[in-house]
Length: 339
Ligand SMILES: [Mn+2]
Image (cartoon, rainbow, N blue to C red; front, side, top):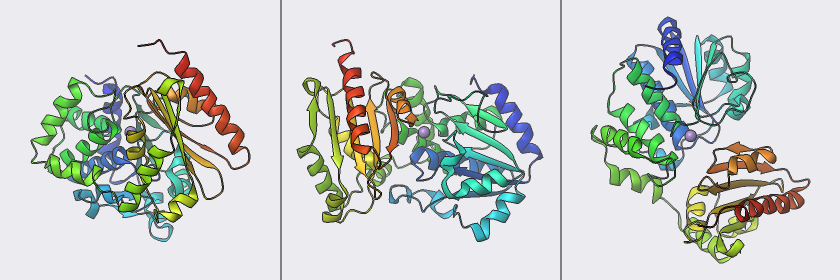
């Protein structure tokens, strides 16, 4: 039984009384956020609710194969502020910091709706979560899995759309079943979802083999220019704006780059610094849980999970902070027991 069982009962009572529901996720929605929002939207629809799924941006092309592609709306203040204000319930998925709702955040804050948070990032705040009702379980594999557990708990209907959505959450947050959060229960659920006529090879192709030639060249650049430290156990690199311009790459996902960086046999931690337009850097950190990259990211104002975390370095002291961050990871890797 889920540790959230009691909270699930609370959510069921709230949803039972609700007519108008808005479901949303963090800006630049990743697979888990997309999957969780998509599954909840469909669940609410099957329950007869007047439900709207709002995202900040169009879906990444990786996820446009989903049925959800035809079911969500891109937030437009002129159209949606009214919808958000009139909602009985707003559910935010895969984030516990409302400011990460991006452009939707002000409308979310202003709405008198009952607010629900469903998330699996470690919650570091004082109360039990940021909003009225918080379903936060840092041990959950993916936010989409919490949504699935909820639907199971209330014995809700499940169809192919829900199965596909939860599968997208599950496979992306486990890196297609390779990260440390993959265990027997994950594979068991994946098998159950796959029974809803999911085309797994096609999903894998859509999500992971969708790169432009420019991004492939970027991968080559990244491996050529990577820095190896601690006898190859820590690898880091920087992606400069000028490289992206030269390669005509406008958008890219960091996961394939991080996958390449950590493909080395000795690698225990990687860091990727992507230069931003303002001269700051978006930083992605990965490990196998040790060193705890969430702890390291928090020191620099970011966060995430023990094995995957991120942060942003402002332009002002970017170089100094980058050096400090690299040194912190280096020390974390050196402190690891040799295996
Ligand atoms: Mn997630």
